[in-house]
Each structure stands twice: as structure tokens, then as C-alpha cells.
Image (cartoon, rainbow, N blue to C red; front, side, top):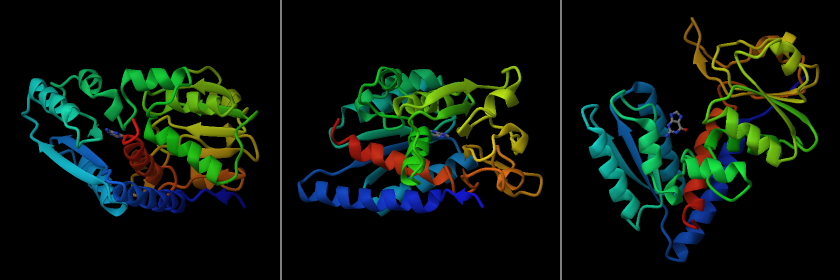
Length: 279
Ligand code: GUN
């Protein structure tokens, strides 16, 4: 029977640890404050933003909420970010993505002060990660590393295959696994003979964005599988990029969906907010 990597439990442990840290910081006179900006009313974004604010409340982080209409101009949004950059009482700035089409996401990300870039999306944060300097790391891949470490799964020397090459997950994931001394391969939808590549993995991280795409024919027996995907299937049931039922008896450890990687993203965002007081 495969080990089920319990992201809900591990994320709660991290949040409890952060709660203690935030109380210690408060006792020394340091408050932690996150500004959360949402543009428009995308229902998924509203759920994510709500969960982020709830996590702040649990830990003792102040959250400032900016709920902006779709009609806001790019210039107005950039001005708000600049004001937040200048405020000494704001440690972290998060702009929920995606943004409406008339707003250039890259420009928005570039405007956030790298010292307050708790999402780890700014090119300076990405650059620091790639050359091994300290900086904010994208929350989902950082959460995957914590899931592995806190489940006692070592990365050093392992064949690690990352399926997916997004800026938010795949690329930083590969860099983090490399930093942990894994032997890392990135593959994607255009990779020739994908199965041959994914089957090499001791640790397979799947972030391809296709519901139940990965069955056991893609996986070496006894591999560790981390499923970053989250979808609703035709019966409105949540599922990942991995066909969980097909692979569960074939792997040594796996993250379920829901309750695997998902809760870790917010825990790592909270961790970055606490770290931002040191930036
Ligand atoms: N949209 C989906 N995931 C994320 C995330 O991690 N951060 C932000 N800012 N937007 C998102």
C-alpha cells in the first residue's frame, strides 16, 4: 500500500509553526502584513483569495484586502502597487492571477518590490533561485519540497522528473529539486516518447494540467508521485493530473487530490510573508 502524503496535515503543522513565529515577532514589536489584490470576480480566484485571508487570520498575519473592479486600468493597478511598495507597514504584496486581458501580468509582477514579492514571481526572485541566492520561491514548488522532506523522502541523488514547464510550477520545481541534489529532467506536452522519460523517475512531479492524464504505464514501480493538478471531472469530483486509482498500488508514495499539494501552496505563502519581515 502506497504512503499517502498528507498535505493537509503537513500544511497545518507548518501553519502552527508560523503562528508561534508570528507571536514571537509581535512580542518584539514586529507585525506581519500582507496586501492581497483581486481584480474582478473570477469565482476560483475569490475562493483562493478567501483561503489566503483565512490562513493569515489563523497565523496572526494582518491582511489588507483590495477588491477591484474589472474596469480598473493597468495604470491604476500599477499605482496601487507602487503605493503599497512604499508603505513600511506592508511586508508582502500578492496580486491574484489571472488578471483581465487589458492588464499586462508581466508588467504588474515587475512592479512589485522584490522585497515584498511573496509569490516569488518577480524576475529578480526567479533569477536568485536559479543562481542559488536567497530570495522568495514560488509557493507551490516550495510546498512540494516540504511535502517530500517532511515525509522522510530524500531527494539527493534521485532521478527527478518534472512534467510541465510553467513559470509558476515546472521551472522553479526543477531548480528546487536540483538545489536538493536531485538529477533533474523536465519534460512537457511536446516531449517525444514521454512515457520513456517519466518512467525513469524515482520522484515524478506532474503539473501538465490534464485531468487523470498519468496512468501507471507512465510510472516506474515504487516511484514517488506528486500530483500538482486540480480539476473537476464530468461528475464534478475533484481530481488531479494523475489517475490516482490506477496508480496507487503501483507507487511507493503519492499525494491525493484534494489534500495533497493544494494546501501546501497557502502554507508556503504564509511562510514567505513571515520571511518578508527579514527581507
Ligand atoms: N493564481 C493561481 N495560483 C496563484 C498563485 O499562487 N499566486 C497568485 N498570485 N495567483 C495565482
